[in-house]
Image 1 (cartoon, one colour):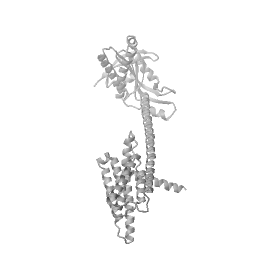
Image 2 (cartoon, rainbow, N blue to C red):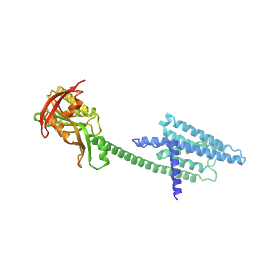
Image 3 (spheres, rainbow, N blue to C red):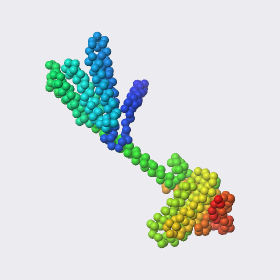
Image 4 (spheres, rainbow, N blue to C red):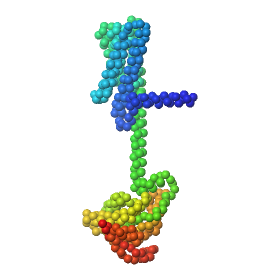
Length: 438
């Protein structure tokens, strides 16, 4: 039983590959049904032209071979094959032309309105007036099953074929019905034959529309899901570093990493609280957003990690979550650029704001804690010391510790401030960063 199922699956896969190569894959990405239907019709016309050609070739070859074996010299089926294959070749060439691609329905009428009537017409020329049910049944059911478009077009194509046949029969002066045939019976049979074909097309057309609608809704739902996922990813990456976001999605464990050496910067807008009393809350937030947005661009430019803003304070770190060899020098460049950025803001907006900046280098613990409103944060004495450098600093200047001075002294101008008393730390030697030497 399993072997039969496997054979069936392999056979189905073979035909799927064969049909895909023959007529191309279905394009479900188009936005509207008429466009999709034209694409579908072109594929089916190409397939049907080949199928009908194979049928005509097989019938013609079989009957010609049979006649040859019987010693008969009847060229009817040979010329039938020649005429039909020539007509199908014309349809194929027209179908692949630019005009044919714009006039697909004309190809359809040509293919089944005229070609399906060629065989009975050849009968007339050879003097055989018998109405061949096999030919008509095969033509109309092939039409209905291989090209399931609007039933009204099938009805028109059938009318063309029948009218074409009757017209040529009349012009040939041949009675198309044998004496034993009943005209009413044949007409009724033709009517029901065409009706069944057209009804099957009508049902298949409705099925096609429902399938297209279902697939489009599914595709739109998937596109919306992808869009929402991308938006969620973007929001998450605005809150967390990429590597931390990936780890957070992969595990529910607490994320806490030790970093032996990073550089932390705190910046604060001087006299921001008194300024807030003279501005409306909306204007105040707009101004703060404008300044901090420029700081964000600087952090991205220097490949530093912004940690957070607290009121009018801005915190950024170098050396995590990805290690950075020159994190102290990069933070120094960032601090100088922040001063220049604020100076430009003052010039553009007729303001007189200044920054107080503090920098320290050391070890920290970084991670994400809690269950809601995730935030990537730092802990440790290094963070506290950098914050003290800012709060005990001087407006408009960048205060650094001895650890930072030891790294920057050969590349930057630093002014010794001397010993100052730091809350919780006692007396510390600090320096002011002035600028780069070169």
